[in-house]
Image (cartoon, rainbow, N blue to C red; front, side):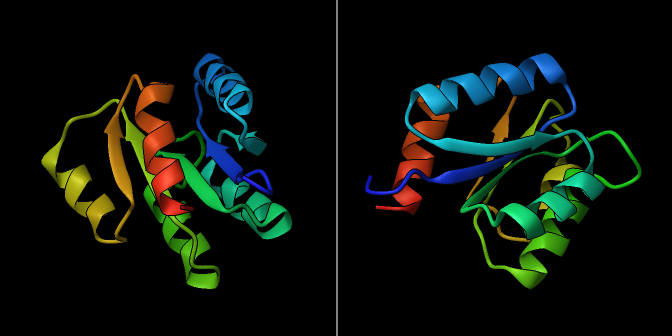
Amino acid sequence: MDRKIKILLAEDEVLIAQCLKMELEMAGYNVCSFVAKGEEAIITAEKEEPDILLMDIHLSGKMDGIEAAKRIIEHRKIPVIFMTGYNEIAIFEKASAINPVAYLEKPVELFELKPIIDSIFS
């Protein structure tokens, strides 16, 4: 990698976000920010211009991760990886409508994420 891939992490569970951020940075990625709300994700994506979104579906605040990702990619076509602790068909179908690169069930591990992220940018 010439330039570190910049990741915006949207996760409302702080311990999970901190662990993922640390693991991703140790693997050579740049986690530009982690946010807990969909609204914050939109603002941060505009400001930071990440290369990829790593987005929890259920976030704090009024806007979920699916809606936030949808609004972000309306302005900038960037890959989205969804994470969720819920295994519901309706949520999967709603998330699939925006064509994410991946849809992962929590807990998400680096060994799952790294090959997905690397394949996008290889």
